[in-house]
Length: 200
Image (spheres, one colour):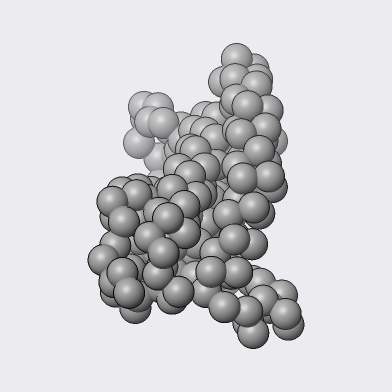
């Protein structure tokens, strides 16, 4: 019985791990979110409006940091974690799955289902939304979109995370397609533990 990994499996797994790397890093953004919440609570109790002003404009923050800026920053950072973390979640097999039937299937049948789902659902979805989101980002850039409540500026920087996250998810999905094709071509009845999606 063949027990060796097919070269496509190795390549696909490497592509998946590469696309998950930004998501691993983005998980650390939870720390500034926590800090922002703490500062926001204290600032609210002290009835502060503007926390700092520096007299010159910097991307995203403009020329001052307000309580509104902190509140918006929390949501924007959470959005970054979600968008960049999607590929990481797929690599770690942590995404939600209704596996009432799937859980009892053989590895080869599971891989076949994943392969069909990725080719006909995941990859087209990522490609379409990626393409549509480019116009969304461009409009925010050209219009100079910013907060209506004295919060963050340069909102296109945050919106640019949408196509970036979808590109990473597409790359991860493509890597999984390649990996799964390699597994089916390998002739092995079961996936090895060391080449599973949970490998790091």
